[in-house]
Structure formats: C-alpha cells, structure tokens
Amino acid sequence: MTNKKKEYLSVFGLLMAALLWGVSYPLTKIVEDCPTFFIVSIRFLVAAAALALIFHSHFRNYHKEILKYAFLLSFCITSMYIFGTLGIKYTTSVRASFFTCLSFVIIPILNLVIYKLKLNKTIVISVLICLAGMFLLSYTADMGTFSLNSGDLLCILAATAGSLHIIFLDRVTKRENMEPILFTIFLMAFVALWSTLIALATGAFAYAETTPFQFGSIIALGLFCSAAAFLLQSICQKYVPSNRVGVIIAMEPASGCVISVFVLGEAMHLTGWLGALLVMISLLYMEISTSRSNA
Image (cartoon, rainbow, N blue to C red; front, top):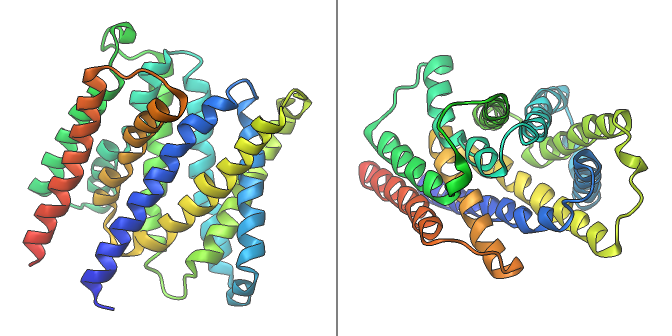
C-alpha cells in the first residue's frame, strides 16, 4: 500500500474516531445524573477489558516502552476529564463546550512552542474557519461576555491536556516497534485505573440509582466511544500530522450536536447548523489543499 493511500485511509479513520466521540454526546446526556468519574471509570474499564479480550494475541509483542508511553499519555486523558469536570462547575455549559473543544487551535500553537513547527497557510486558514464554526455552533444568548472566568480557564486546561495527548501520540506512534493495539489496551487500562481511584476517593461508586438503560449506555461509551475511537486514533495518527489531526477531531462536537438533534430531539438554531457547516468546510479545505500541495 502506498504512503498516500495510507494517509487517505488514516484521515478517514480519524474522522470515524471523531464521529464515534460525537456519539458520546447523546450517550453522556442519557447518564448525566450519574457521577462523572463513576461513568469514566466503568467506561474505560469496559474499553480496556474488551480490547484485551479481542486482541489478547498482541500481548506477545509487549515491551517496556509500550507500557511507559501508555502510562505517560494516560495522564493527559485523565487530566482532560478532571479539568473538564471541574471547569463546568464554574462556568455555563455553553462556554464549557466551546472552550473544551479548542484543541484545533491549541495544537498548532503547542507544536510551534515545543517542536518549532511553523504554521503553514493551509493550517492557519483551516483553524480560523473552524474557530468561527465552533463559535457559531456553541453560541447562545446566555454565553455572556468574552472575559474569562475560573471555569473557562479550567476548560481551556482540559483542551490543552487533550492537545498534548494528540501531539505526543504523534511522536509515539512513529517510534519503532510501537504496537498501536497493545499501546491502546494499556492506555485504556491506565485511564481506567486513575479514574477508578478518583471515583473511590470522591465516593462516586456509592451512587446506586443507575437504570439498566443507563448502564447499557455506559457500556456503549466504553465499547464505541473509547475502545474503538482511541484504537482508530492510535493506528491512524501515525500517518497524519498532529496539526491536521486537530482540525479533523473538531468534527467531534459538530457531529455530536447534529446526532443529538436527531437522536434526542434537541433543538439547534440556524447559527448552530451554520457553525457545523463551517467546521466541515474547514476540514474539506485542509484536505483538498493538502492533496493539491502533495500532488
């Protein structure tokens, strides 16, 4: 298979991962009464167990580096949930959704600061279009002023943690002998471990009112929105630069809003539909421009 074909398939795989994360929006809405880390703990325990069971033969490829990088990157994902959970307590849900999804802006900035990767014209234009789309997608009259409160800053830290995961994963997946499936199994296991410890410390497991439908939704979150989505990311990001990944992953909130409209019957104003369209346009612009420059 040629490198160009691998790149195209990887972009498609990352887009599928973003759509799966988008499915998590309506599923999380179903279980919104459950403690956050009760959900996160079970979700990632299910993800780790399912992947380990399906891909148990890959454990023969184990080496310490896989465990080390899964351990380190698990802190990025866990931090993302911690900051996001704390942030939404001190700001509105609308502002939280906007600031938590700013990875596509943060990733190019961090790449510039950490790795001195210059921003090309295509990425800058794509990010600006995507930023306008995300603003319209999340904007409502109760969004308030543009001054930042403590909750907003915590949500930006959540987005930064997610961005660091994408940036570091870009390097990890390109290392020799890095087994993406085994790496994802350990990554899910470590996130499950940290989330379970937090759930135990905060008494989240004392919650005993989960209905069978809610518990089934948490299982679905684990199987599809964690196991399948993170596995696709680990496999596909090897062939797609992290700056492009940031814009592709921005399809997550856009698809989440659209799916919520059709599945949960939630209303989305014209500005929201326009925002979702702009996010898709930013992705199309980036991929078409990249294809032309590589031709």
